[in-house]
Image 1 (cartoon, rainbow, N blue to C red):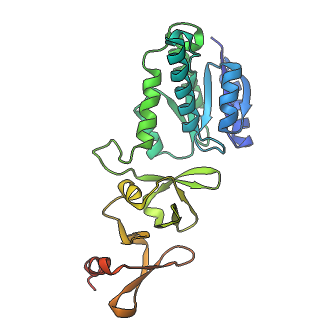
Image 2: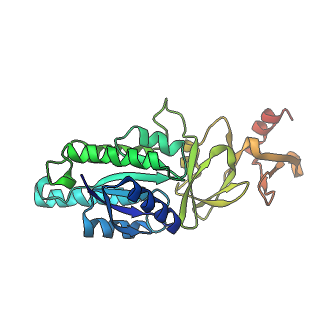
Length: 283
């Protein structure tokens, strides 16, 4: 059984590697390749592939935004046509990611497969076999009846990734999505030094780089963070207690914090939080 596939990844080497492995697996015809989310949507519309290997972090639109756009479009077309039979079916999706904790937990509760980078021949072969089994069972790509629940499964994935709390016992996720230039990175909360808001933009500063959060307020960001580790030292700053390098006495019995980032940023402690600071460090 031969199936058609797209490879969407912003790294040429990753595309070449995956193409080589798929050729080795056999029975997979790679009909096109793309380097970003915008191309992904266009190529899916053009080729109607059985299977799409989709990178999670890409410029233009990330992999999750691609899925969201396709799902939203299908719903709009279905409502206009008055029934799903007139809607172009979704292909099978295999996500590619370099991050194996928060992202993988999200993938594991769905029927959508995933591959970790660097790719492995045995794992690629397994993903292809899973896709073939679903197609043979009657997926939209074969022209048969739509596979039950595929869009709801993708919806569930999107809800998990966009949720301010993880579904596991209501705890905050171990990783946070941070936008750095054109990439969306999954960052360990432990690596975050502090967050600051300036003119409505929230900066996330780690020990090695800084980026932006898609949260609109620090309150919204705090909902995503481990409350035992992160503390709002000032109305404009949230700090990781474990990344405080130095507590410096300031004027009129106030304090400043020197953080553990490259710049050793100094952050003021508001008067309202001075008591909390003293409790934290027995000052």
